[in-house]
Image (cartoon, rainbow, N blue to C red):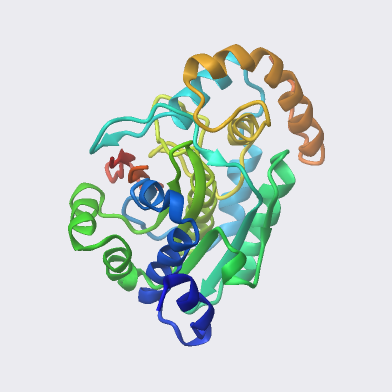
Length: 324
């Protein structure tokens, strides 16, 4: 049975977490026959390092970080972080792309919530928050797996390695485990024009509440294109030493630049650099307006790729990689 027909025939309420994404990925590539080879070999994966328990006072952890968040950045600070995070990947297992990767169509998110505790509502709230803070990004939940181009799988921590193996195969899963020992991951497949065609996020539902939010925000955002982690950018969640649990202002800058219509998939650093002087003023205005309630002073001065991030304590790290 062709994969696209299989997609329609599947009873999703009876499918295990170990079989959902392989079926969905196969169906997506069959539905795009002219680009299937490029897409299936352009998987971008963002993985978390070892997850550790956090305080049960989740709201306090997030509030403390929000209250101490820096919200004013110079143009050069924004430019530097964007170039380091949107174009690169830290651990390289193949040639570097060095180009913009982003969705060029509406993003529809399907949540496969089979494990306990149920966290679909929390994912929906995070999706709403991201959508509210990124201009020009058409992002929404869907209950139709066939309409989805971003699938979130909520699994138990003990099932994550088996899930990774079932999706990416034994050999690549072994490479991932040896390099990163991941506990969460996100990935996307791009076509030869660097347009993201599908994305996948796998999250452990039985992590602590704060860690779940911290992980979910970072993985969902990385699935939209900014794949790298960089320790030299201290204000971003795309840094092994930074924990957030919310969509911070600095990363709103990065995502709003990425999804400005003038920034196109496949652009180089040189091409983006020429556009930033005209893009940044509009981005500043948007961020100042959308964060007014928070009081943010934002107007101040294909080939498989893997990216990993870590919100673990010092000494426990995961590193972004690119697999081409």
